[in-house]
Length: 452
Image (tube, rainbow, N blue to C red; front, side, top):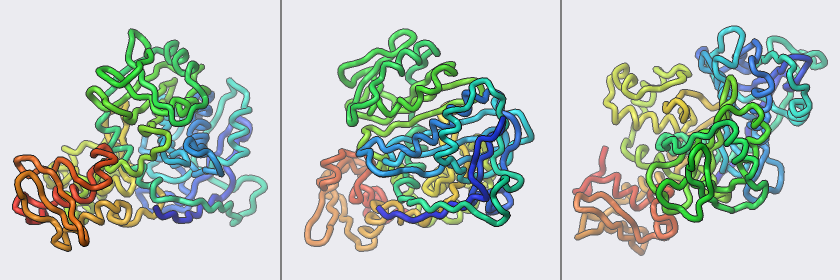
């Protein structure tokens, strides 16, 4: 997995000043195009203690490595403004935890929130200041400064170069497609949330636990089964503890049905004026980048650039994206809309809000590159098609020739691929998306012709 060096340039360091939190911005996208240092909000936080603790939690996730916690890992959070709220997002350094803080309209008091996406500087001194701030003090918030801070000369930029692995960008895409399939499985009151989260271990990497709803709370379960919810790496939820005194409820989301093995899950802690959601990968050693949830959608169109451009022009940092409305506005079919949205998701332009059961628009402030470059299985599948490596249906199998050997893809009566003899399938059994051979078969019709 390749790693690029991304330069973040801030006009000044973010800082906590008396009664004011100034967050410096770097390289943002707005309705008016790219802006070096966009300004999205100036006003007050109606619930400053809760919002400050939640922002600190997002920054702590960005600095954490839950799998093999060695070396520094800090990627500045991304903030999206969509006209009425602010969303702060980060990934852990290991790529297995996605954190998002939504500061909702009822948590903001000020001028109208702008539109756009950018990085915000959350440096070590700011984090320490947030930890030490006096509770109960009013707090104004500025996302993007109007002028240079005292002590920083005009034209003097604070520059920090950070490694940006492709898996981080892919993680944004994979979490939205994964969580869009989740159901709300449990709802805990504030008291039950405090009891449950305070009882979790702070160590124990690699531990997978199971819980089941029981009355107003959750109780441990010994194994997966009906009603069970996976809690993979429970120590990864410790980041929620500083918010417990502000909590109003805890909502738990997970895939529908009875699990047979570890799955991802999402844990949403609500507080006055906002909510903080942590999405956990199925194992602390497993990042989101390899989940492969988008591959089938990406494979259904070989050249969707026109559709992608048409939809991109209709998105305007909407807090709710309705595919049916986009289909009507663009004149595209619903299937073509979903495929184009999948391509936009690979560039980090689509997120998913579990609380509202809807996608939202953002534009990550990074060079996202081409879809195939970030999806080697898709690239390999297309190479197999170009080499005419997918054979016709023979009984219950299709043969996919790879060099001097072949893999057999088992198919259903209608030609739908069900499994493969390759090492990837033997290891993952499809729970991390299709292998390149299955994907290549899915990209052909039952007569062996490539679908377009």
